[in-house]
Length: 256
Image 1 (cartoon, rainbow, N blue to C red):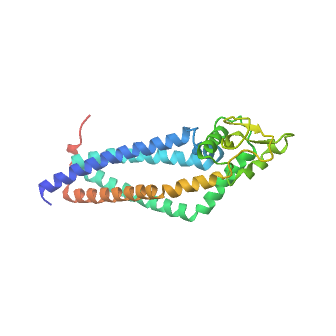
Image 2 (cartoon, one colour):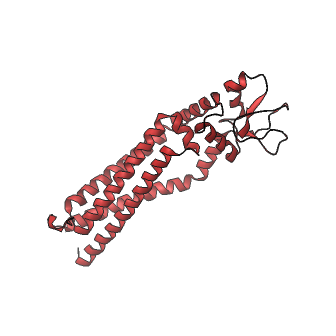
Image 3 (tube, helix red, strand yellow):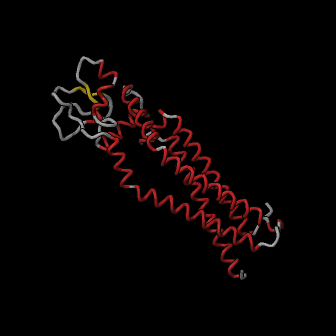
């Protein structure tokens, strides 16, 4: 391989690792968002399921590892350190295998995951009081913005303990359909209605969530494929550069 080609490969690998460092920071930031967010659908699942908390810690760990790999990859590329390039290749290979394994597990366990999610949401609806500012108010926000009611439909709210034991007819305030006649309008809690039918949306939120996933399926798949291609490119470049380095010269490592 010519000297000019080696130089191009080296700096291209450096830029690649710089991007890898940035992507790692984004992944870690997303993990922190999942861990601390209290204004989205994630918050409902996170407080009710230990799995979501574990997933957020995994994202933070993967992001931190990616940032470290990006840093060492940059050093290995610029200063042509074979051991760092080899370590970088090995880590990329392990991450790629882990991603493929996770994708396969999610695909074959999708029914189980869907059932777990349904159990979490239905359990939250049954015990809903309107006083919990994290999960319950977040669920109210989801119902208002997605214009849906309950998980599979408004009938889920008939299982709510307060509604079942109340002497008046109540419904979830965040299910309120403004196009229907009614009096009381609140963003959260339980409201009373005097009409025969509650003025609520008839569509369950599971339909809205599935629609969002279908609408964005192409984007999600494209991101996954793009990440895999970038990782393969990094592996190829690191091996090409590693082969051109005859011996490890640790004197090239910068002194701090």
